[in-house]
Length: 413
Image 1 (tube, rainbow, N blue to C red):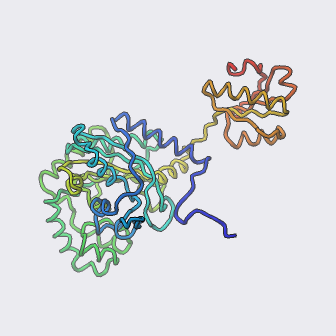
Image 2 (cartoon, rainbow, N blue to C red; image 1 turned 90 degrees about the vertical axis):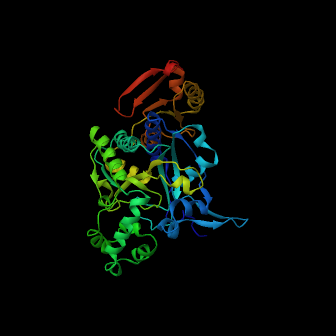
Image 3 (cartoon, one colour; image 1 turned 45 degrees about the vertical axis):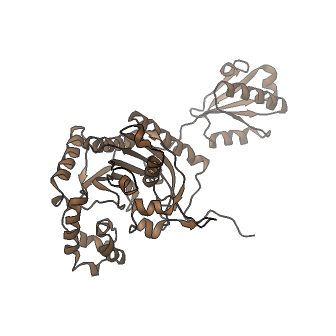
């Protein structure tokens, strides 16, 4: 019989890893709450048209990477490749704009893209993201970036690099696109096939190309910040001013435009030296036209998404794993001991403690080995003779110290 394995490009998160994932998720929830964000949960699949309109028909995501299929009624459905389009759809469908001028929302969960599986990039991957919908202020741009920086600090990561740029508005960007096309006219034949397609259909995406032979050509292109209008320039300067005021270090990256069509003005990316060539761990920006393009009122917005797989990889490489011992493991060494432990475990659980015990009576050595591997804090040894005497042996698995404790007085049981 053929061995059944997970589909290529997806990964299981095993129990020894999941505690770290839970820590990441809870840390994010705690930080978001401080800034007034509330959770929104959207479906993992949507009508394909949502992503075509929201992300852009000529983006790599829509053209190459989406998992799309027809359902039983012939409707074209896609697994979500990112979170923003779904959040905006829910924002409009449920009239959230009528519930307050500013909506601060966060999400977390799996996304899906058909890409070549590699370190930190899977076909099912997980993101944590926020969307602040309803304000055009440079203050919220700065606050969003500061929030992201503080989130990394809460994770214990203080060596990230924040890259910033302004991608302009629809007015000034039109002129820049003409200049860009003119500058690339005699170079495009030496660039990759994707860039040649982007040149005709979506010229700004050329700036986002990571192909080695295209990078040298991109270095000589005009800087978008030289072309942006006075309003966009003032907005960006205000963002930088607030970041400077709070001591946020950043790098201006003139080629940074992000890979989705809906971005305008402030765009940003967070990278880490711990990730190799695919070094981006979070990214985002302002998207003031997206909601109107999806049938809603003209509404400014900004957000970011953070890749959980890459974040967890950084935490592991930096030795910030969730390895703290916790919980109690009882090692019964006889039938009477097992029955007594069963009763005590329920009493302790009722008091809010995490308790497990050996259901099958095995040797003490085997149970001690199990308790150590499972990262329990305490091992409590209970034999039939100990039950008669009303005492147990309590071993601290952090320190190795062993104490004798009265059975009936154990943790108030």
